[in-house]
Length: 140
Image (cartoon, rainbow, N blue to C red; front, side, top):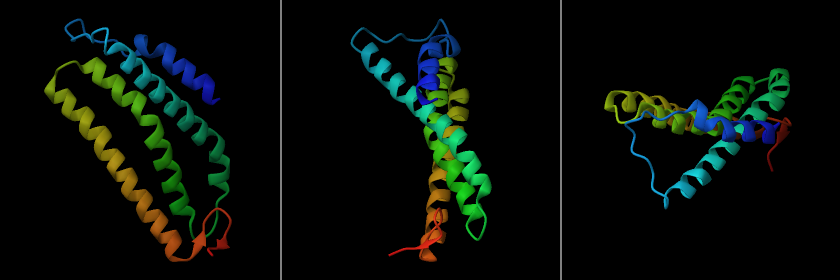
């Protein structure tokens, strides 16, 4: 699944995220770096989708005192992975419009900061109880 989503995202990027005609085009020296960046973003999208898809049954079965923390970690880790393809793609689509740029930046940057903060909160709650949430075992 990771490779299917990764390849689809990479191949479809130019059609999904079409830049306005007025956009500044990268030069020949920059193009390989944008391609490499697209490969990493597509791979992160594939990994994030596979993470959400494969771990959802496990997260749904979670019971006990760390159910809320498990959901927070599940959503946050997935978002930290999948957001980049959309974030970078929207940068291409909006061109140089500063208001739309602010919406993209606030929407993604603030949500990533909040996801990181939520993960810290969840892990501190779990670890402060001296437990590993996935196994219910005491930490050594």
